[in-house]
Structures are given as structure tokens and as C-alpha cells.
Image (cartoon, rainbow, N blue to C red):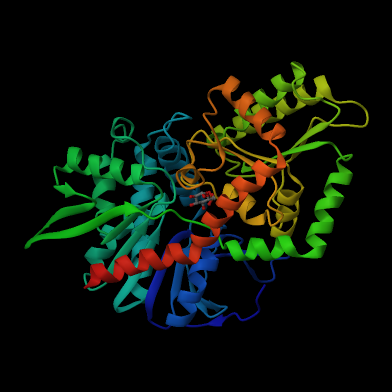
Length: 472
Ligand code: G6P
């Protein structure tokens, strides 16, 4: 919460550009609240110390606001009309790029009208960033909604240094090449000095696409981009994002949060085993696969239905996009079937919660969960996996983690699964449920060390250091 909101129009040496501003309108519509999430936590200190600005959409259509100061950062709102939201955000960003980049788990839709809106809105973001950046500023652009911004910015402001971080996967060439505007998107990204990806594989896929589509030379993450007077180098490499691990650790040590964790277990009827899943309600998360495996374990009586509960938090997301509406129907049908088959009057097989929760409650849920299920079919990183680990100050708990989540590269002491292999997933869940405490502790110790030593502050430091090198 903050009330330090005032008008400002300073020039900024450091500018962050992302689709969403790091604040939400509070429900009473009376002011702004900081959005949850690590990106704000990581970048806020940098913005505060440099007098930086953050350019983004305030999250509601037709909200045309002047720049304002918030907690020592200058926020520069970019207005989106209802039509922009439909064509640029719900359309091209979330029904073309999102499914395409997540290995076409859901079929991407290609509409020329959506592309036109994507170009138009990317131009608007680029102009807004160009207008607040001081001479020689550092500009850091984020994510798939804004892939054209780096090049547009370079045209508007050749004096600035431009970084881009891609929070989601970058697909293999055979998939990427479906995109009718594949060249324009690559050229857009190559406007950057440094292009960051979650996994080395994503950076490799990008370099391949650049070679095949544009014929540019790429060597160990350095890409030679031809210019009017020769060539410049763009760097493409992996910078796995993380969380503010200390915040989760601190919350998990708080007596009230620990008491809440015990209370959650009691409210669930003190089952012997609590399984936990938490995701945005998105088809990339493999929630259906998880439910299928769990339902079969109950039917086959490998899990004792009187002794186990799965808590599934599915936070509402992109609810006006058809694929998300269909997914919600499928998931809720599956939950209803499993509960109908296995519930008793006093006990539920699945507690399904279609809400988002504050961080304290999430940490209490992590502490209450014996087994955390992350079964994404494709995921850039999956920060829930890292949050679970950071919250287990007691050294207990088991993480089941999909090999298709970026986090699998780092969290090697998790139980690794291929969520498409339902039998394998069932076996992995049983291994997790039956894991001796000593082994839980051994694995959790290594996982916690990794997350503690590679937090989100380190991530942004490393990226920004490479950007400084690029400047020189
Ligand atoms: C993913 C994306 C973010 C996006 C978030 C929430 O994490 O990488 O760019 O902001 O999902 O999605 P939304 O469409 O609500 O912004």
C-alpha cells in the first residue's frame, strides 16, 4: 500500500517497460496498490535509486492517466482502449503468441487485424518510453506483449541502451516458423543490446530462428545484426528469473503464518496427506493431467481416499479468451467428477478454489502441503515451485516438478515428471507421498540453497551488468 502518489514529469536514467504497471487499482477504486510479484520487488530499489520510470498499462480499458509518482518510482500509464484490449491483449498477445510459444498446447489463432493492433500498441509503448528516457538511459523491456518495442525504441532513440527479457518459453524453430509475422518479431527483438531468456534452450531456439529466418551470424549467444554502417552485436542468453526468497523465508517463520498452516490442515479435517497445486487457470499448467493422475490413484486405492486431500488453487486469468473459458469448464467438470466419485459427507477429495490469495495465505498453504504438484506442460520458469521451496523453513515437503518448466533446470532435487505420462506421474506422486522424512530434508536442503543463492535481486543484477557491458 502506498499513498505517496503525486504528479511528476522527470527524465529517467532507467526505464522499465512492461505490459502491466506494477500497481493495481484497489477494489474501492480509491488509489493504487503494489501488485504482488517478484519483478516489482527486484526492480523497485533500482528505480528508486536512479529516479527511474516504469511504463505500462494500468490494467483497465480506457483509463487515460497522466504520469504519477508511486513509492519513489515514476509510473507512466499507457492507455488501451476496449478495442486494444480485445485485439492486442486478448487477441494477439494471449491467443496468438501465448499458445504458439507454449508449443501450441492450444491452437494459436492468426488474425491480421490482431497483428495490426499489436504493431500499433507496441508503437505506443515505445513512444511513451522514448519520451521519458534521459539521454543515454538504460531501458529494460519485458515480455511477449512487447516484442516489437526494442527495435521501435532504437529507431526513436539511438542513444539509449536496450534490454529485453522474455518471461515465457521461446519455441523450437518448427513451431515458431508458423507465425506469419516471424521476421518482424525477430527484427523487433533484435533491436535490443541484450535479449534474456529463462532457459539456455530458449536462447538457442531464438538464435536458430534468427539464423534460419534472417541469415544473421550467431556465435555462442552473440548475434551480428547488420546496420546501415556495418553491424552491431546483440547478446541472447539465459537469465533464469527467481523470487525474493528472503520474503518467503521470513513469512514462513512468522508464528501467525505457521498457526494458519496448522489451522488449514485442521479445516481440511486433518488428513494424513495434503497435496497442493496453485496455478493461474491456464492450459499450459497441466491441471487436467494432475487431476487425472490423482483421480486414478484414488480409484485404484493406491491413495486412501479418507486420508488424502488435494487443494487446488486456480486463480482466474484471461477470462474473456475462449480457450480459457473452455479450460475452466473442463477443469471444473473433472473436479466435480472426482469429488462426486470419492467424497464422503465429511471429506473432500479435492478442495478447488477459484481465487487468488494474499501472499501470507499462500505461504501458510505451502507450509500445510506435504507434496507440491507443479505439472506444467510448458512453462517459462514457474515461480510457484521456487516459492514452495523458499517457504519450507522446516525442511520438510516434497516438490513434484515437470521437466517442461524452466525451474527444472535448477531445481534438480525435485521429483522430476513428464506430465503427459500419466502412469509416471502417478508413480511420482506416490514416491512423494511415501518419501521418508530424512530424504525430504536432504532434498529440500539442496533446493533451498539454490533458491536462496539465486534470488530475483541477483537475476536483475546479472542482467543489468550485461547491459552495462553492452553499453561499453
Ligand atoms: C505470465 C506472463 C506475464 C503476465 C502474467 C499474467 O506470467 O509472463 O507477462 O503478466 O502471466 O497474465 P496477464 O495476462 O494477467 O497479465
